[in-house]
Image 1 (cartoon, rainbow, N blue to C red):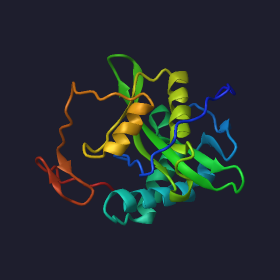
Image 2 (image 1 turned 120 degrees about the vertical axis):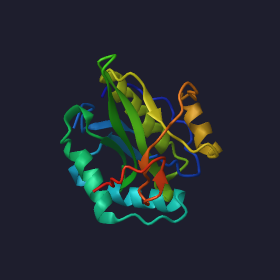
Image 3 (image 1 turned 45 degrees about the vertical axis):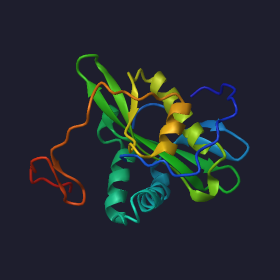
Length: 205
């Protein structure tokens, strides 16, 4: 990432911004501010990212308690980069004073055979409760979007619940627009076992 001068980040929203849910970008610090550093996530960040994911689910999904081992396996697979260019990847915000990971954002790439390039889907973004309204979420997204441009990503997409007005306003403020050209259609099962459409009977490992 470049060390270009960064404008003051916009305030992050008070409410957590839940997601649905290897490669370039570098693991070195991408941005250094007075209170935090944003950089690519590495294997040593696993436990911190897992804890943020558990907190995200608890806050945004009515107290949902995820299985720590399963989340660790999921995050670990992304950090390991086993799928090459299509591996999920993470960026973390680290407290400059304590070295603690205070926020993270993750993306999962999708390949386009028509355009011979990748799309990125934001799978999760979360900032710890004690570190909100300091521009952390805004800077996580800025660094992610800069990395997407470096890698020639076609678009960066996300899903947000229709009634989450705060998150929708935040994403609009940082440049995302609502695309009504498609609708999401699903078939199979939700992680809780609820059937969507006609069940395929398959479940995540």
